[in-house]
Image 1 (tube, one colour):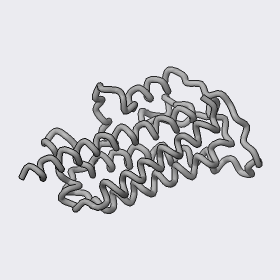
Image 2 (cartoon, helix red, strand yellow; image 1 turned 60 degrees about the vertical axis):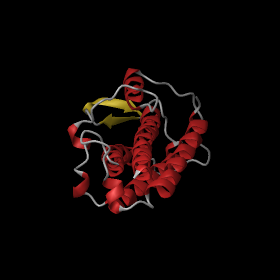
Image 3 (tube, one colour; image 1 turned 45 degrees about the vertical axis):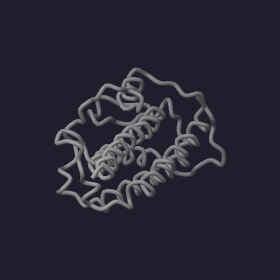
Image 4 (spheres, helix red, strand yellow; image 1 turned 90 degrees about the vertical axis):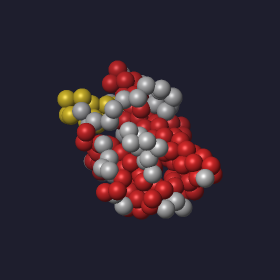
Length: 193
């Protein structure tokens, strides 16, 4: 894929995630957002908090790259995007279509639902996704194949900027799908009673 088309596509997908949060999750009560289908599964608020924890790290690193740009040209140079083994592996792990469950590393595991304010978690999620959406406007001036950002696994393992941006959106979609499944199960139980 080409960089400029991909940036636009990623922004469209982020907008869809934000619409889902506003339409499907924000109207629920705190108790509903904290509801878990079973003790070993996450609630809606846990899905969103996990995204906040993971994405804050990457967004901060991407923000540093964008801030270092200084004066921006008037028209970004398009490029064909390439992935390396790090990008391909991380994209596979977070892809919404991947059926294998990978445990979240400890640093990005959410706290217990009762220890979180669902409204704060939703507001943080919205702020982070809007920040990423805006960063994409500026990130198109960077070389997505050459620029790299650290991963959650440390500075020794870096991911290409293009793969990182794509991974963030795919990760968001994976856990939005998970949260929607929780919402559907909750609705089914409510209708049954």
